[in-house]
Image 1 (cartoon, rainbow, N blue to C red):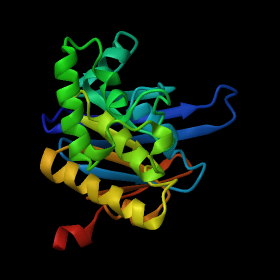
Image 2 (cartoon, rainbow, N blue to C red):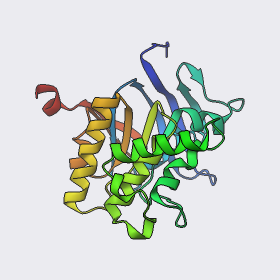
Image 3 (cartoon, one colour):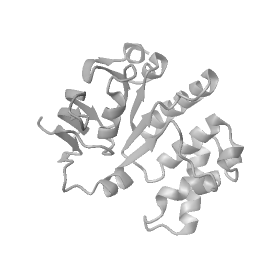
Image 4 (cartoon, rainbow, N blue to C red):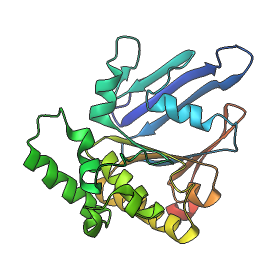
Length: 234
């Protein structure tokens, strides 16, 4: 792959084998994600999509092949903690909010160690909480929030360090239909207003079709790579 400056993330001939060597989770996968794209990775359980997301987020390493972020190969010399902290935001299906911290405090957690004062952290956290429509819930603990509200706070937290890449793992998997629709609308706003590069992993056709582009994964391979024609024509 030659480097194109518009490419934020590239996956080049990536394979991932489980430790026992009997199962190949990813099989010679290659694709590029451009800055500002909204991409869905879709596939059934066991297709390799969650493994792929972990590799995109540098939470796991490929057995072979390369992951290239902003033109630099992610390898054993890369400071992965620093890369994730400054450039990659994660939204998990289980939220992982700290139960003893308020919504405002949870959103501040990634900001510690970034050279910000307490007042700066609070100001930025409030801005993010307001952006996800949760300003009236900033003093609430996670147990005092609905599932959808917790997801919104988790999204605000994922934006704390202004990531260039936002990764979401089954972001509507625990949500009812109405709440899930609200989260997808929020993703649209993040993509349109903040020009976020957004990658979501899902088994839901509805969630996938909210994206500009859909990568369909089956048996560890990219089965298809399609532009969302509905969005393109709207």
